[in-house]
Length: 479
Ligand code: TYD
Ligand code: MG
Image (tube, rainbow, N blue to C red):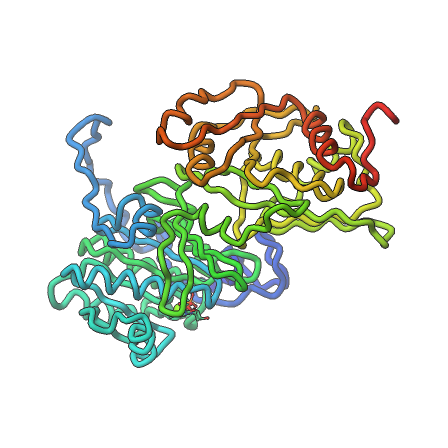
């Protein structure tokens, strides 16, 4: 007699166990394991005839290649991230915090495509049709011929979509609300999410429609439940932003048909998401000119230069262990920069709280921001404002040397375009300054100020602060 398989599945990571337990061994979460019926057919069940393998031909790498047919969404910032538009038959997962603007973005995408004459279907499992309509009205898009439905049954959805001519784009908002009768577990469980996603992916591959699945993100930043979907879909995009800021950033975490390092920048306005074609202007727009502790970092996101202000505050501490807080940058890189400042430049920070913030709610990951962060920190400590027309970039090594970074010319060009007059950059492998200068003949040239080591940068900033008070900033050899 075939044993009926019961399995216990972690609702956080999808790991399956033979019996219930309080803690998931795979992800370490407590109380996430729930009983589910294993609907998966086991291979080689006794009594089932074993299928003989079919022969197929193996092909060489070279051969007739067809470019993946793409459907541009018409929203440039979105297409930049997907790599030029939706690929036919592909499935894309869009994750993000609740309320960040996923539905808003997708209604805009749907409306733009529908207006361009492509059949677009928007299925909402979370909101009633009236609510989606209301949003579209607010966005001024109610005239677009988007086809709407509030449905949660995957079988019904696929049957409806397969009925008439196939839509070019199907939006499922959200995958957590979908359920399929093929799986016995309760709606919302990992098994349901996985089963529903599988059916929808099969539909996409079969029909050639592009499908977007919306997925909610848990508090620790994982796409809840859909974590298990991530490896099944063709692309995973995340929509990010700080709640209190209006900027929203679309990033690709995985993309089978395009780059993963491009970002799309949007601004949430009263009438929906607005594309930001030149993010540097936005991130620098509310700049605090001439106050100590701010430095402009010339960064790169994907292929795009991005100038952003880095703010630091160094203040005497009243605590036994001084605070180190950082928003928008890596905590361990801050610790490293502080350690290098202490060890090689004689900057004593052990009695100070240190706060570092990347303006505008942006998150930067590049080590090239080291130099800008260090400049902002020293500027705050020395109470010496940095030149308002300067940009900084360069990686700091543990020895205190300033190391070169990639795409220096692109960074310099962007700085020049936005009217900056000088760049403080690594000395080694100096970029070809002429390349930056020749662009736009009328522009004033950018003055390059290469620095070899962090010590010389600290000395420069300290010299600027002369006349003002210089607490705790001593030359390294005084020790
Ligand atoms: P929504 O798209 O519903 O978020 P999600 O689907 O990711 O949960 O966006 C909701 C937020 O966006 C809400 O807090 C209000 C804000 N918003 C605007 O600021 N302007 C607008 O035009 C719209 C439609 C929403
Ligand atoms: Mg929503």
